[in-house]
Each structure stands twice: as C-alpha cells, then as structure tokens.
Amino acid sequence: MGDGVSWPAGADEVIKGDLTAAAAYLTPAGGAVVTGVAPCGIGDRDRGVLGYTTSLGFGKKLERIVADPHVALAFHTREHGFSASPAFVLAQGTASVDLTPSRQRLEALIPQAERYMGEVKRGRVWDRLLREYYAERVFVDIAVARVAVWPDLNASGDMQVTGAAWPGPAAPQQPPRGGTGPRMDVAKAAGQIAARPHRVLAYRGADGFPVVVPVQIAGHDAAGLRLVAAPGLLPPGGRRAGLLAHAYRPQLVGLGTRIFTGWLEAGGDGGGGDGGADGVVYAPHTSKGFVAPPHKDTLLVLNGLLAKFGLWQARRHGAEERLERLAAASAAAGAGEGGQPAAG
Picture 1 (cartoon, helix red, strand yellow):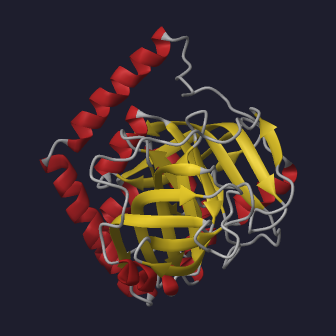
Picture 2 (cartoon, one colour):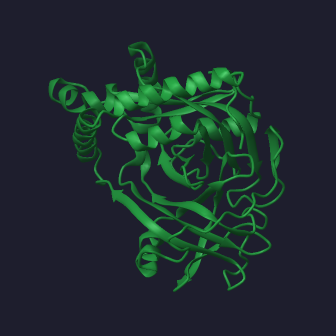
C-alpha cells in the first residue's frame, strides 16, 4: 500500500486520543454501512496511513472492503479517550487488508492497545481462552486521501480539508426495488437508539468515498426517524445510508451498539432543521447489534468465545480463501490501472 496524505496536528491529537471511531464501507448497491471500531491510536501521520484491527470472523465486512476499498473513519466522540479537542474529524482513504500480519506486528500493537483497552490478560487459562481474540487478528490499513475537520462534534461551522478537494454533494440515488419506506418497526428502532448517545450516519459521497456525519434523532413517525444534522452535511434527495448508534464505558466495557441500513431522504438544506416534514427522514430497513457485559473479565470471556466461534465459522465456510482470492484480484486490477483504484 502506498502512502497517503499527512493530516494536521490538531486532527492527529483526536486520531491518537479517541477510544472509538466509526468505520464506514460501501455495499454493492451503493449504500454504506457504519460500525464502531477501536483504532487504538493506529496511525502514521508522516506516511498518511490510518487503520484498525478486526477479526476474520467478520468475513462479510472484510469481503466488502476488499471488493471496494473506499472507506472512512470518523472520530466523533471524546468520551473515555485522551483528547480534549472539540473537533469532528473525518478521514477517507483506500484500504488494504493484511490477512496474515506478522507476529512482530501483532506484538508491537499490545502496549499501544493496553493504553486504550486495559491490560492484556495472561496466564494458562487466559492464554487459551483469548488466543483467537488476541492473535488471530487482521489489520485494515488505510492510505488517507482526504481529512476533513469541523470545529465541533456536531460538524457545524467551516470545514477544513487536507488532501483531495471536497467533491460537493452526491447526486440522488435510484430507489430500491423493494421501496424506500421502513421495513421494520420505527418505534422499536427509535427505542434502540434512545439509550445510545453517539450517533452517526454514512452514505456514499460524490467521489465514491463514504461520508460519515453526526446526527441526532428529533422524533419518529410512520415515515421513519426524523434526523437533525448541521446544515449542508447531507446532500438533498434520496439515497441508501447506514446509521450507527452506540454507547460505552471506559475500555469499551458495557458497549451497546446498533447498526442500521436504510433509506435517507433529505430536504434542501441537508440538515433537517427541527426534523419537520421538509427535513431529513431515515427509513430503517435492517437492524443488528449487541450489548456487552459491564464487567471487564466477563467481557473478555465473551470476546474470547465469540472470536473462537467466528474464526471456526469463517474457516468452515472458506472466508479466508475467498478473501485471499479477492485481494489477489483487487491487487491485479489496481496494477492494471496504475495502482490506483477508481474514485467513483
């Protein structure tokens, strides 16, 4: 992977300080999915490279990233982190997936991860339980193409861009064949979001990179969730979009997360004002999520068991082999295009 764009010092404080970030990737239908990750300060400002680790058990997500490497990381909350900056930072770039990181790379991450996630548990029982969770990781490395910084966590005020110029608003998308309206109980979706204060929405931007912006919920009705965002953040018209709502305690203990896909309709100002009829409406189509135990040791036991099961499933269904084939095909296609994936 080549080097990317170096970001400003103020953005670096946020990137190196936040406990969690919102990671967005694209779907074949032109939508975006946004999930929470713990980047643990992974990033080289001089090289313009960011990243995070994940499990091979999340094979579908990794396949999507390999198939279309346009991704984004949004640093959207300072809670339980180390930065005092009020800024909202969005980094967009091209990802590559290190499916077989060296032992040296994995071990080098441990002291860095302990700063954010707490001490690594060691001992005969813990080593056996957590082997897949700690050692069977993959790295998502992102060569940064653009960093956008807003002065506050609402992403209001003037945006400062480093790297590729901001492309302007994305054009509306064709409605899905199944219709644009809600496909799940909207009141239930609103209830799932209510206790999770950190909320961001993601959509495919005009140049093919995901755009992730903060939103608030102003209410709901039969049409969907009424959203509010700072003016200009959401392009007018309809499009597929992903929504993340999550809450967490120090070291991500007690993590509660909800991930939605759905259809977004935005009015002319791209913000939603008071969430009225001419504002922003999000019709949820799918929802998934989980609530983690509020006790560290219990959480680690659960993580260890889930990692074992996820890795077993991934290998049983050939996820590793599919990812390797996709990665090889993507690398060949990139080489044929001068090493640069298409932006649109």
